[in-house]
Image (tube, rainbow, N blue to C red):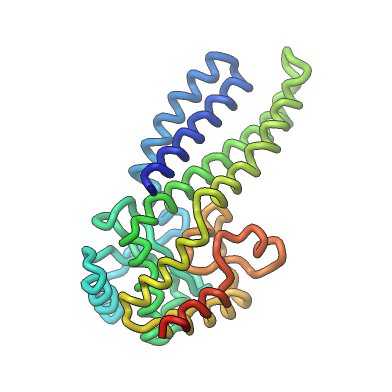
Length: 277
């Protein structure tokens, strides 16, 4: 199912790019946009994980300095019957984590510095097990590609905005109006793609399966509560297009962020985990 969703997303991106190319350059612009879209599709599939890691300046951490973390991940990977993923860290104080990679053999578990400082062993184990559940279910493919695609569309929207402002009216008086209309459509679509392609239900599944890998649902339940409290004090410096990757919403809670959040309510996630005891 995730491969089907991925294909749909790539088709949507191609059509949007060709449409924008046609708006600005007619048939020739559409053809150039089509070529660009095909290249971007390939990059999104093969390198979206590297793009996301680069976006957050994540660095692979050595086992010699983080042997306890490596031991926890190795133990959980064996429990989940998964190959050992690479482990990266983001040097942010906000506690959070995400998994990426197009398949289990290419998987990466990424944690923030704040996560390692905040959680005890059982809580950290619960978070790592949750991320490995995403790897096991191959959620990371659709999650990471969606982030890359949404970012690309937002970039196009910004480019179109500046073209509309400084490009002048040109031969067609309605050119600027069409460009602005394209922007007003493209930007919400970028958010909508994330909302529609990434189901909240995947977090419940990863919570339940991660609890099974860790053999203790209360570790993750406690971690989620502490992560939510800490994120209010130290919100993540994150891109909205990648928010769905993280174990909890990286932004400070508000009515708007809750309304459009790709994450289910933490309280409900905790309740469901407690019911597994």
